[in-house]
Amino acid sequence: MAERLSKYEQAARRNQQTLANRYGRVDYTAPSSVPAPAPAPTWDSPSIEDSQYRAYVDLATKNRDQRLAAIAGSAQQLRLNYGYLDDLKTIDPNNPFGQAQLLKRNYDQTRAGTQNSYAARGQQTSGAYQRMQGANLFGYQQRDDALQKSYDQARADLINQAIGVGTEYGDSTIGARGDALQRAIANRQGAYQTNASQGQNDPIVNVYYDKNGNKVNVHQSGRKATIKK
Image (cartoon, rainbow, N blue to C red; front, side):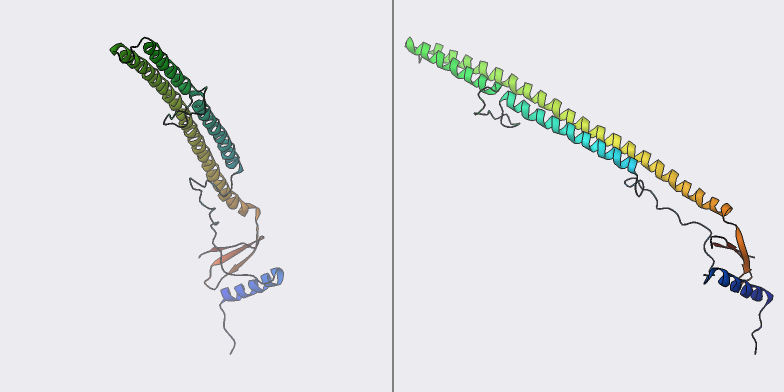
């Protein structure tokens, strides 16, 4: 018994055969007319690849590292000039021309000179001798305290410079990320506009009806658009 087809089904069969002869095997499932969205940009990854953003970050990172290296070199030179081994201000015994060592040497010479002077007069155990040595020690401690405070201030200046470099780097790269994010969003919108405009340059080459009676437009590119009744 021959299969009875409605006029819509008969028309659909004829159109399917025509398309098969023209384009070969065709997938007749109706595709979505909405283009697939581009990957959503994020804050840390503004786009899949943004060469402008990457070049900016690479240059900013290089400049930051060079400036921090220069500050580290200045800190080392600072310790050398002051004659300290570390930031605890331990006097470097192998740096005879450091300020701390020169100050200590001057004190030792002054104390020895006082001792010899009072010993020559037989007054090494006198109260005057003790007072003089106490004055020598106080003078040394006063100058040593000023030297340490000077070192602390110079070191604080270098630390503030390093903090400034890090802050500047963070601010500039955050700005670059924002710019890259805006470009990614613009590119994404442009992709939608391009996909939408493609329909104007993709004419309909055939029309058929599916089994539900819906009209299906077949474009030159092979794209199909279903118009529900």
